[in-house]
Length: 540
Image 1 (cartoon, rainbow, N blue to C red):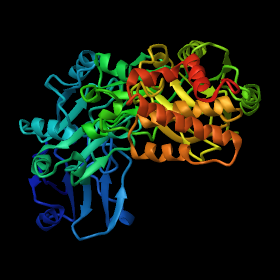
Image 2: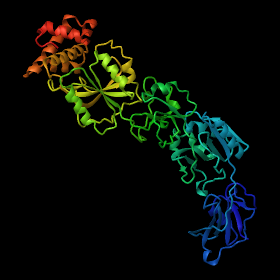
Image 3: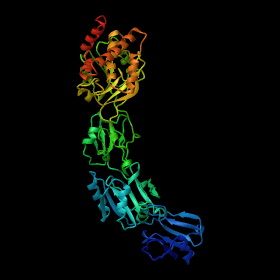
């Protein structure tokens, strides 16, 4: 029988300890020698075997139940380079490792702990706090065993085999098992002495010197619960929800979709994950709740790389009240939206601007709707699949329109994606219905506003807009004001200019008094003021 050596702990057979395989060769007194692993079970292994002549100059390695290199070697005393991986017998590895159970305070935690307890009667339970780096460092500082399993309440271990062990040459690595498709998983096999040497010298677990990401064994995560929401902003829903899980799916969709498996290693990787282009379906981490005030973007970690589908298109509401080009622009709108899945509706001859907008909101079946005003000829290539951002607070979105008289391109007379709930709650207390509430400008050209199709509308449109420009002292509005006041060489352009000039005069006469400026909201007052300035020949 050949000499038998071991390198680390004493095996359950008679053997001599050495520092390395080369050291074993030097000390061997036989033609061949055995080098064994102290964790293997050799009770049924035949150490009397000898290589056949044609394999006499090879290193023979027997597998364990998990690895082709199971840590059992038969090799010639003289150096050799050829390796023969045996498959005639499996030497079972019985490495003992402690188990630490990380509790994420999720609903499956208690049931899962019972599953893990059935594997070992010495499972330690502790809470996950903030990051795996800090949590593992805290755990390892109190562990005395050589190897350690760290498992998570986020995963299902019903079919997991805790007899797994690494290949002999990977013994001192940090082994990470994927959770579903997530490479940065929640199950760790740790060589404790090596981990203690490294962990306090790195800031992130990802910086660990030798990480082995296991590829052939996947540990399934438990499913992510969902909360049904409206298709409005999810900000209020997130703020009001009591998070009993690390992640919650907020959704208005009824369709099936594949959820990504979030990386839980640290807060920066626990991102908000929209799954649709308008954020109607969103994975939100528990970490985000305390950050969010007025918008989900108050939480700094958001990933939009998992968007899988488009949200339902917004309704389109055409708003008219006797404009001379209303029928022409209505037919044009129907033509450019023909074949689209947007619902196109019309509000006509509703007295009062506020009443017309609110009637449009009542007709909408979507949380936002495109308001198309009768003076606007929409662009044929406008993207009607555009979506509001539900990660922001509820707001109106103002597109751009081209003014053929002034040459300006900004939000005046442009299409607006109105938030339905805000419209219905708008008391119109300011000078501008839309600007009275939260809003955002979208620099997309929605069409051309042919407002100067007659003298009355040319004057009225200019008068109302310039009142608002005068009352808003910004560099952009000063430039726009000047463009409205520029002279024109067409009759309707001249009446637009007069409307602008009359507005400046009126603003100065009333010293910008708000209640006086707000009179421009009313059609009757505008008619009377026009008649006072220019007679009744061209009455509005």
